[in-house]
Length: 120
Image (cartoon, rainbow, N blue to C red; front, side, top):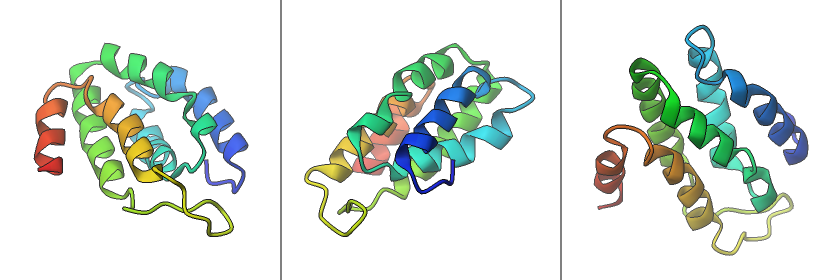
């Protein structure tokens, strides 16, 4: 997930989504996965978010609690102004990225409230 090419990072996330909430793997997978999603600068890269959101909604309570903390940490790293590689400002970039990450936070118990507290 650390490759410079967004397409390869997206493919890595797609490959990990099926096991992202598995009790044996979630602690290793979620932190880098959520940080990677929070750093995307192209809308096509968000394709795995829907499947991941569905996985999170069906996860066990301990996995959901861990995911919430990791997603909130990732959400906090999203800068006010995002730039494409090369430096050009990504119009509405931060709001788009925040919306994608927030969509995963909202499916978790307490996510809506914690998100509201962050945006006050």
